[in-house]
Length: 205
Ligand code: SF4
Image 1 (cartoon, rainbow, N blue to C red):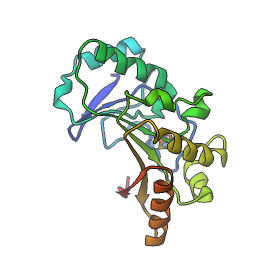
Image 2: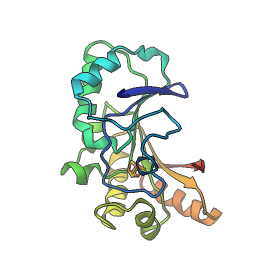
Image 3: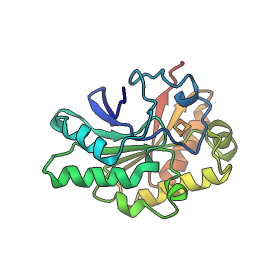
């Protein structure tokens, strides 16, 4: 069975891709593929077409949800063109969307080869960027981007640009092996880019 969207804590999550340019040490993608705190099996056998995703979303009652979240088992911005199309199509059909959020690693501009942040305007209400480390060394050790240290710079730059177009930009960090000083350094970094820091508690596998 293919899970395109699923409910979690009052929000609707959309999963269109398994692809990612990172290999985070904690990622569920390589921790046995199908275990997830969110849904039973998020590994897509094939990526749904935008039409399949639209049909899935049209079958949902959007008024029930707190947020519509593009996250995916992989990095959702690989499919940003389709995400944007879906948002536009739903609105064009008169569907009143709850706030739209994207959970991302912040590498979209590198992945898609252009600055996509202006396209977020009016479509995305909340962006949550995974910070994953207080500095470049920690970040690259934890997330193992395919571009190495460039991934850190790209993520910071994406956050800075996105905060010009998206009302709420957050950077998230998991509170594991972090001192209060690390957390404060992360907070200063996020705020310097126009984002708010959100500290998530660590959930062991
Ligand atoms: S960025 Fe997300 S999807 Fe990609 S490897 Fe890290 S946790 Fe997994």
